Amino acid sequence: MEENTSPLSPRREFLDGVRDELPLLLGVIPFGLIFGALALEAGVSPMGAQGLSLFVFAGSAQFVSLNLISTNAPAAVMVFTIFIVNLRHALYSASLSPHVQHLPTRWKMLLAYLLTDEAFAIAQRRYLRSGLEQAHWYTLGTGVALWTSWQASTLVGVLFGARIPESWSLEFALPLTFMAMLLPSLVDRPSWAAAISGGALALALRSLPYNLGLVLGAMIGVAVAVLAEKDR
Image (tube, rainbow, N blue to C red; front, side, top):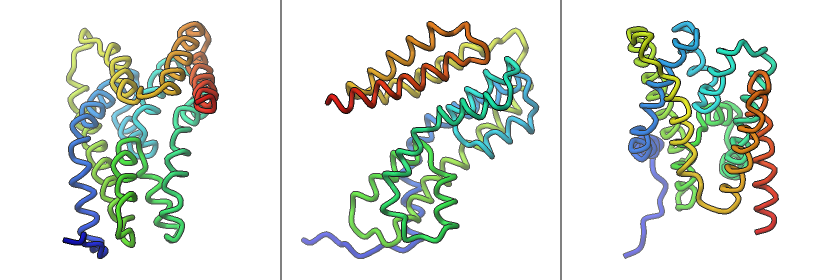
C-alpha cells in the first residue's frame, strides 16, 4: 500500500505539532516553575520575571541573566552573555532556513521568535518527511505549545515563589537545572569536548567579576567543539 503523500491542512499540521511537542513539556514546565521562583529570590519583580519569559523566551539565557542580575552586572554584560549563550540558535536557523525561505517575513519573524531547543528538536523531524507545503504550521504548533507552557509555568512559579519562606534557599536548583539541560546533549566527541573544556575554564575563572568566566568558558567551549568536529 502506497504512503499518502498529499499535504495536510494547516489546522492538522498545527495540531500535530502541538501534539508531538506535549511529551517534552513534562521537562519544560518544572524549569518554568523554578525560574519564576528563583527570579523573585534574585530580586526581580513579578512583572520583570514574567517579562523575561515573554521577551527573552530562552530558558538557559534567562537563568544566566538571574545570576548576573543578582551580582548587579552592567546591562551590556547581560546582553553579551545572553548573545553567547544563544549562539546555538543560529545553527537551528541555518538548518530550517531552506524550508522557510518561501514564507513571508512576518512568518519568518514569528517562527524565529518561537524557535527554542525543544521546539527545534521536534520541528526538524517534520522536514524529513514528505508533503511540506504546510509544514510551517507544524513548526508553529511546536513553538506555540512550548511558549504557552513556559509563560504559564513562569507565572505559577512567580505566584508560588512569593510564598516560599526565605529559609528555603533555591540556589541549588540553578546548577541542577543546567545539568539536566546539558547531559542529554552529550552524545558525541565534540559535545563532550565543549562541555569539559568550557566547564573547566568557567570553574577556573569563577573569580572574575560579572560571571565573565562563564562567558569565556562558553566561547572557548564552542571553539573546542568546532575543532573537534573538524578533526572528526
